[in-house]
View 1 (cartoon, one colour):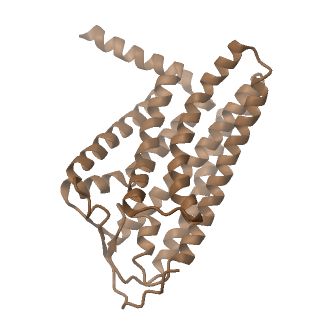
View 2 (cartoon, rainbow, N blue to C red):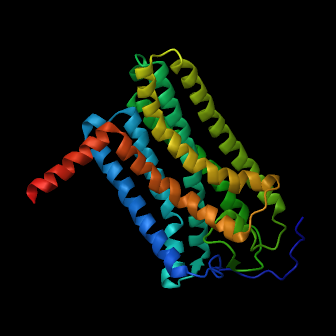
View 3 (cartoon, rainbow, N blue to C red):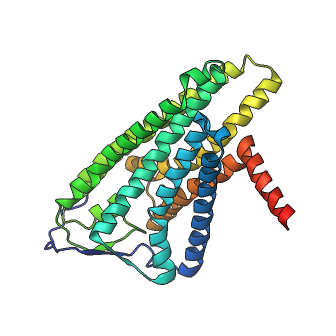
Length: 314
């Protein structure tokens, strides 16, 4: 267990981001993050605009896709601009208040990503198992209310972090990670962080385990039902699940390694942890919109019509 920091506490108004200090090619990494970030934001904004502008897409499934796009923008925008600023512009300082806001936005994004994927699994479960009752079980109003409730619950979990940190004295102003997250900030305090790490790991384990098990149970129910269908129906059902399954894998794999497994003995180097964080932030936010653009018939058709009009003008 880490020993208590006995250094004299200091008044911290700004933090120094030191996660990239040992990076050999900061410009190349910064450009890669910048391009990925811009693609992710543009793709998610396109999904949102497609769904909002077309009344035919004002259905529960598309409202959930739209909500996922909003979450992805919040999630990747919470940290990517800071990393880009450090790598490309050399701006490696951030104010204390901005750091706390960034931490809250990052945590909110990762929690909502799990919640939304779980609700989307429920949507697919009802659509496949109870196709004739689907529109009576899931209506737009219920989806919107459920979405609001999930955002509220996620905010309740997020509030724990700034409330905990504000009261703690700081012995350092340098963050050893890529941006402001709870683990980075708590290690700048004068207290032993193990207690706080364990508390956050417990909350994270509960949320990730609950949502992941919920998704798995939904898939198990669907697979049991699909066994009764014909081969053509199985292919159709499988196609509707692939998009969601890709998003689940991209989100949960790095999250489980970084947040859950490390609390049970898996040791990661600082570089490995930094890489996982970057992948966890940028991966889902880039993959999700393209998956749903390319695999959702209505959105793909709308995109095709836009390009067709552009070619006509040319």
